[in-house]
Length: 155
Image (cartoon, rainbow, N blue to C red; front, side, top):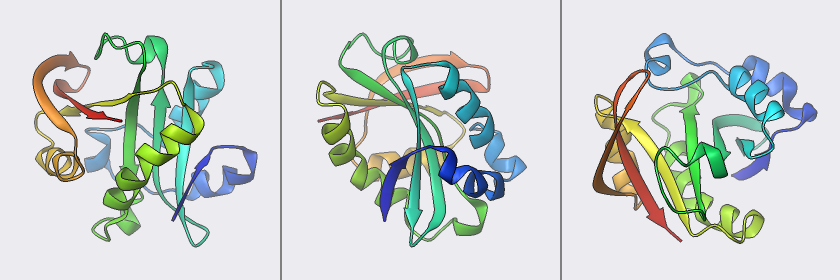
């Protein structure tokens, strides 16, 4: 499995990415997120590919993006994390989260904390993040889709 920054060569993969309405209760559509990252120099669209198949998508967002969730100027926010619905339950999200610290250290050397906000009702995702080393330090925020638990992973 490999992580890549989005570029036009992945356009067809993104257009074929499948995400269910149930998933969209807690996350964003990759196509919409890519548009946002093309307008924001601090937002990066990341694709997880397994043998040339796009299996997981998320954004990394520095500076203004992370501010609602952390005061750490060296933190980066993971947002819109999803797995293509055809690949759910195969362990891809866990693999991606295990690869992510090394990827961030390689490409964003100043970053010392990964931050994410997970919906209080999304218990499956909370379990995944905890299993992968993210810590709930009791910080809560309100988001457009409900109350969020802010979790951190220290690099």
